[in-house]
Amino acid sequence: MSAPLTILGTGMAGLGLARQLRARGSTRPITLITADSGDDYSKPLLSTGFAKGVSPQGLVSRTALEVADALQAVVRTHTRVDAIDTRAAELVLGAERLAYGELVIATGAAPRPPFDIPDSLAGRAFTINDLDDYRAFHAALTALERPGRVAIIGAGLVGCEYANDLRAGGHEVTMIAPEHTPLARLLPEPLGRALGEAFAAIGIELELGRGLEALQGEGANVALSLDDGQSLEADLILIATGLVPRHELARQAGLEAGSEGIHTDRFLRTSMPGIHALGDVACVDGINAMYVQPLQASAKALAATLDGSPTAVSYGPWPVLVKTPACPVVALPPRRSPARWRVEGEGADLAALAEDAEGQLMGFALTGRCVRRKVELARAAPALLV
Ligand code: FAD
Image 1 (cartoon, rainbow, N blue to C red):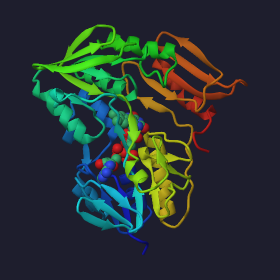
Image 2 (image 1 turned 135 degrees about the vertical axis):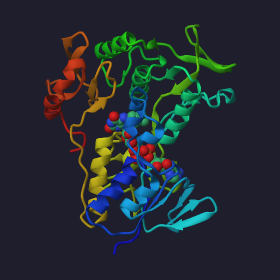
Image 3 (image 1 turned 45 degrees about the horizontal axis):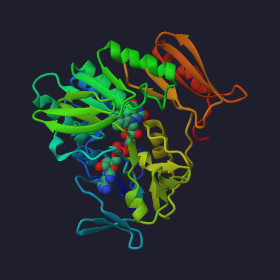
Image 4 (image 1 turned 60 degrees about the horizontal axis):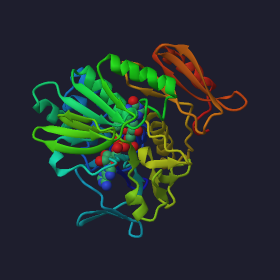
């Protein structure tokens, strides 16, 4: 039998790897460790729950106990790993030390608020990056006993999805961001404008091109001051200003890692023998994609490797589907700046093709009815990691 395997993290990456190993028939002992409840859920569904009125428990597909049973694994929940001692091959969990045989780090990415949240806003300012966050935000919204006024800071993928979802769930939503159009990192300006117009049409207030200057609790309200002198009030604040890979444990243990994640090769090997990484925390051969398809491909390849068949991972030309039903969006961002963006279509139905100097397709962005072109364009686009 192979050496026991310890997987740090029970998100889609950690659980996906354990599942792939069992699907291959591996009987190797597996221990999964997580700082959270260990419940199995699909993180992408967090930003679709308010429109459908789904309770946090309704998002759980299997409890940690059911996961342990199904995977024939030990699952240690609410257990934070404080350090990795690579010399002793041990994890430090408070006063406890836990030996590992082989280790896989799948600690995901953490929200990156650009400012300190004042104590006066405890229970009113949130990030939602896992099910426990969703539980806390859901409880605060439900406690209002009326539609909430939610100010979302950030207009990236997560901010846009929650804005659309909360609005569809009957809440008042204001979106604040310094960019002039939503999803500015994924969409060229005309497509971002189309998304912004669709948001405005369903009643989302857009305060774009403006920064947040101050934030404080005033009685039951949160008072927000913007850098153009405007003041706003909300019940709750949702901060969606990006995620950074949780690479600190790895760095402190001497593994090669930076703000882009833990460096791995195509076999998901870190710079330390016997330690692999995958998911949002891993920067695989220079790419940290931070979405589901790459981590699923990584889990499959790593399961094969750990099961005795070394397998390099490759990523296809996989576009991101943004869950904004007010104006559907699909994007495959080019890896380098394109020579030009060619924009076709009209109204909200737009296709933007990123081309190099020779007219080769490098990536694309689609809105409205043009999202139907995703398969045709993905076939012509370059793979993310060949
Ligand atoms: P995580 O799910 O973050 O799991 C990390 C795990 O590590 C957790 O179990 C955590 O408790 C544990 N952990 C961390 N540090 C420690 C520690 N010190 N000790 C013990 N345990 C620790 N992608 C798509 O492809 N399509 C989508 O539509 C999509 N929608 C999304 C919507 C939202 C709102 C968000 C936030 C993301 C979305 N994504 C989407 C991205 C996708 O969900 C992530 O890429 C994926 O879930 C990351 O999984 P992970 O396992 O790497 O990390």
